[in-house]
Image (cartoon, chains in turn purple, red):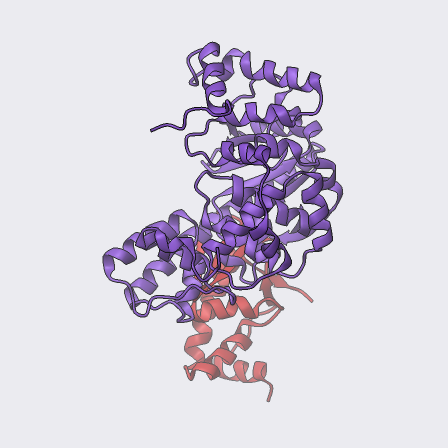
Length: 380
Length: 104
C-alpha cells in the first residue's frame, strides 16, 4: 500500500490522531496535523490514547514547537501528562540500575532491551521515548540464577515455569512485579513461540553497544540486532500492534547506524524475514513514511510462505492463547528430544503452574490443539 | 570587571566552592522543564524557567552567582532577586543529592 494512503485513515478519529502523534517529528511522514486545536472531547480522548500508548513525549514536543495546534489548557494537559510519565521512566531507570548491578554481582550478564536503551541510543530527544516497564535479556544458562536474584530482591514472579528447566531451554522469559509495583520482564529470547525459538542467541550476544544512565554504563544490543528486536516487538509483541514499537522500527531504520548486510544476514539465519517484512510494512503504513529505503521496498514486496503465515497467525490472532504459541513453536525445534521435553512440559506441567490457569491438563491440550490445528474454525 | 566579580559586587557574597550536577542523578529534559529523580528520597523534582536553566548550566562546575547574573542580564531581571532565588534552589538541590560541590 502506498504511504500516501495510510490505513489508519480507516480507524476511529482517535486512532487516526494517535498515529499522527506517533509520527510527530519524523521529517519523512506524510501525516498532516490538525489545522486548529481539537475540541475538548476529542482532545481528552486523544490524550487518554496518547498516555496509554506512551506517546506523551512526542505530543509534548509537537505542541511545544507549534507543529501540533493546542490551546493553552491543552498545552498544560500534555506537559503535565508527560512530566508524570517521565517521572515513572526515571523510577524505572533507577530500578534498572539496581537490578543490573545485583545481577552482575551474581555473575549474570544482562542486555537492556527496548525502553531505556532505545531512548538513549536511537532518539535524538531522549524524553520522547517513554516506557512503562524494564526489559532485560539474560543467557539461558544464567536464567535460573537471574530469577533467584530477583526473588531475593523481593520481586514477585507472575507465572511459574511449566516444568523445571523450561525457562532456560525454551521460554521467551518471564515477568516480575517489583516491591514498588513496577513490571520487569526477564527475557531469554525476543518473543515466545516459533519465531523466538529460531533466533540465534549466540549472534544476539556476540556484540553490544554501551550507553550511560545515571553515570552507570549499561549494555544494549548491537544496533543491527536492536533493529531486529524492534521488528519482533512491533510485529509480534501484541495482537493489535502498538504505536511506539512501530516508531522504534522507523527510528532505527532511518537512523543511519545499521549495516544492512548484517541485518539481511541475521534475518535470514533466524528465518525472520516475515517478521521484519510485517514490522516495516506496518510501521511505514501507520506512520505514513514517505522515505523509501531498500528494506522498506523489499518489505512491501515480500510474500510470506505458508509456514510463515501459520507462524504469524499465532501472534496476530487476537484470540490466540499462550499454549497456541508454544505448540506452534514445536515445529521450530530441530531436535526430537527437545520437542519431547517441550511437549512434556506443556502437557504435563507441574501443579503450581496450573493454579489459576486452565482447569485440567486434558482441557489445556485440547484448547491448544484446537487453536493451532490447520484449518481450525475461525470463530463467528 | 569579570562577571563573578560583578556578582560579588552586586550580591555581596559568593558561594564557595562551585557546584556541579551530581553524576549519578537520573533526569530528563522535557519541553519547558527538567524532571529529576532525587537519589536520596526518590522524590520527583521538576525545574522550570531559571531553575531548569541553572540545571543546564551546571553541567560544568560554576558559581551559582555567575549563572544568576547571566540569567538576570538575559531576562532583564534584578540580579539580587535572581541570585537569592537560585541560591535557595541550589541549596535545596544539594541537600537532595542532585548537585554536589566541586573542589577543583
